[in-house]
Image (cartoon, rainbow, N blue to C red):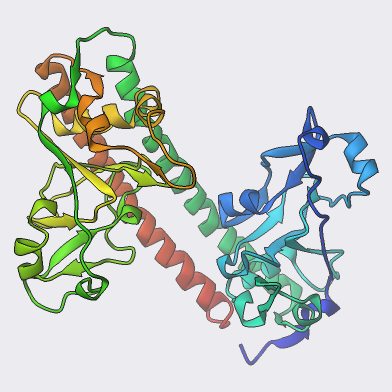
Length: 397
């Protein structure tokens, strides 16, 4: 990188922020101008074409609140509240932008915008972050000083084209993943949604429905210390797609704690789990076969299926929105909502013939195989992308 000159960011563009979000529904009812919030930026994390927002402003609101309007091609980044997330985006639509987001625009002719966008993905903005009123934020007076490599413009354009190809490959993989995530709920609806099957209590379909036990905090480890330590599932390990992601902050307990003090909390592959204390409430997953035995905390209920119901059918029935919402409607509490074990045991679900359940389970297993292959492919593509970013701005491409 030493062969390139550097320039302060403030010398090649203007840096500003958006407006505070108007309060209430009226400014957004039947609105037409996209309004970019932090959640819109977070939907993508990195994107060179942010073109979707949840909210749109009315023309009256734009005038009343004197909203700044930005044209496509601006670069966006979190400037307060979510600095650590390091989102980056190129605005793909004409829009207003919330004040928590910083905006780079009016670029110098010496910089390729996409080159700058990719370089800023490698720059950790948290190094500029300070706490003001308890919220992480970045001062524009610090942002303008960020040093940007400035190779000749043709070289910038060449690097940007190479990284565009890599980002396009990632986008294709993300789209394929989203399609597969829709497949299983769609399959469930296709096979069972319009049919009428007898309703049976969960207590009659399960060997037992109980909950875990939370050990003392000093008994939970964040890594394996003894060879026979047992993985300990917490609510945040249950994923939105019905799995268990144990690679995110793993936890373990000793075999002796597991066998004696946490005996009622022992779970096995194919046990269905649901958190019954929230928020969040009603996250549902199935125990994988990565380990022979697991353990869980007291916020999670165990549903151990009898032979008359397939565990994968039970999982996706409980995850089916109309059924899940009916169960969650029974929750009680003010700040913390709870479902009792008795409510879970008495809850009734439709039960089709076992042969149909098994057909569904087989097709789900096949789909999960495709998803696993997609995940491995996505990891390789992400590693390649990060390698290309690193090499690009080290002048090694």
